[in-house]
Length: 219
Length: 219
DNA sequence: TCCATTTTGTTGAAATTTCAACATACTTTT
DNA sequence: AAAAGTATGTTGAAATTTCAACAAAATGGA
Figure 1 (cartoon, each protein chain N blue to C red):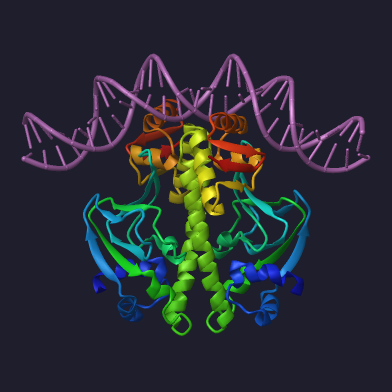
Figure 2 (cartoon, chains in turn yellow, red, green, purple):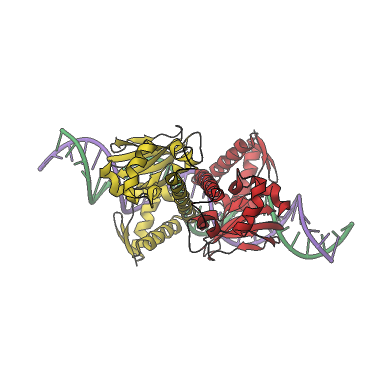
């Protein structure tokens, strides 16, 4: 497990926990590591929501697919980030999303019951983890707020610009790379890919932005 | 404060906390109660995100307004429910939403620093509250997932039906009352009010549902 | 009760999005 | 290096939404 320490130290779940305690905690949590190849399914929609995932290497997409096959991308997780923690913490019976590896990825899996229900009154590490989970969930909630701020715009153009502005702010620069290809960005913004492509071209012609693949610069 | 105990016992923040401890906790948290008349602003977008709100009586809307005046309704809070807790817990600098009383309402306000930063290692009640906050935030995250499931549909009809189906499931009945008027429902679904009205009429003509004001029955 | 105000429903025109189809560019595999 | 597959851009027609304006219904005060 030691080879994952660099990643785990950055993981919100283990914030403020010292290396010397980490190894025994992982044992206590019964943490497992699994490998998933590109496009393989980490979690399937409808399965029990008992495991919390941590990306150790690679990345994955959180997706929802409705009965018509329309895909909505809830987000993407990178190394050291948690996923499915909300469903586990809320003790949901079934996952409403699927998680798909974007590239060959190592994923740490922890049964949430080891975090929520064991020695939560005595062990200072468990208390710390619950505090960390609370922080993490608060941040996720804010991320959803931001997303709704973007998708509640009524036109493709407005959604795109709202999204690019947030990305630009996040990168603290007017040029930045987004973590989506065209289809994925369309799924995230909840618009048509072709309409999105058209709008990007239009904004480029109007001199509002420059772009090359998933690199953008706002002018 | 004792007159609020019936409501507070149902509040997720105080789950599992006995009456005999509640009064002293409220003192320790420095909880204040304020009254807001209908349409009055409880929290203003942009103000510091330090207070957590609990509805004691009445109700309030969580709203976001963009630079074009388009309003998006993030949700509505009822007695015993928390609001703004995500921003407080994430220690956000500024609120990205406003909270507006829907009717004459009593609101309890608690400075989040009294929950997050005081005696969090020693006092068992603080630990319990943090656990409760984590649960609450997990449930809120799931609520947002549901909302995205609804608003990610591409047509007014699909959004409406997805929303009504969720409400029907929640009520465990095919007839139910929704907490929004037409304009509010339109803002929640992110569609035009006039188009929404038209769609409801159409569904009624097609025999898919019956409705009267904000009462619906799915057939 | 009556008046003023707010909410809801309706409609047609304008704007926008979706859909389908295809061309081009880029990647990956063999 | 060629072939196959994938991603992106473009277009026009069809479908849908938005917008604006108004009528009808419901609500809240005076």
